[in-house]
Length: 227
Image 1 (cartoon, rainbow, N blue to C red):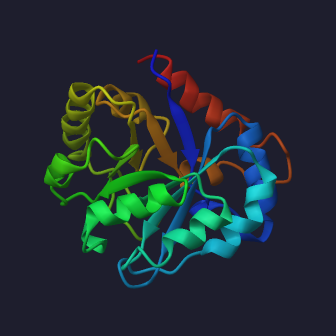
Image 2 (cartoon, rainbow, N blue to C red):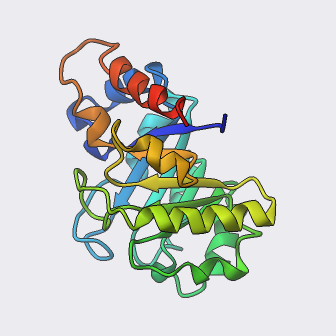
């Protein structure tokens, strides 16, 4: 079976108890903390920055996967690397020099990812697939949590999976948007091996039980085991 990774998006977490949320969701069996950065410019929302990343870094040894929905991207990359990010991903439309941005991320000691919106063509991968560590397919339009999965993303996942398999490199294929218990298996069959889920996980429970996310993460794992 593929090495499937579940990546809760803290965009949907309770920010008044963010440290507790992260500790609880990792204890439930999640693998990656997905950290959504929005600038109210590239996307119509404003979220969190490097100081929050720095604050949560000591709370977990899990991978922190920073998704930059900002424009331009280069200025903020070193700040997130210093704050403890492990992976930094960006949208090709937000960089004037994609190869240079990838190089900057790598120079800072992080893995680099490229993110594709629902209508963004995959040709940006043609000359950089040998340099990146992650491809993130957005199955919603970025900016807000709780949106419905766009089915066309399945075709995009299949196309990227074929490219990754052909190149022979160990590249994570991540999907973000509308991932739930009832569709995660179909998404995995299309080629994804990392699954960002926000509201599907963090809306599952609102109490102080440290094991409150065990049920939903377990259900996601059970569906993946069927693939």
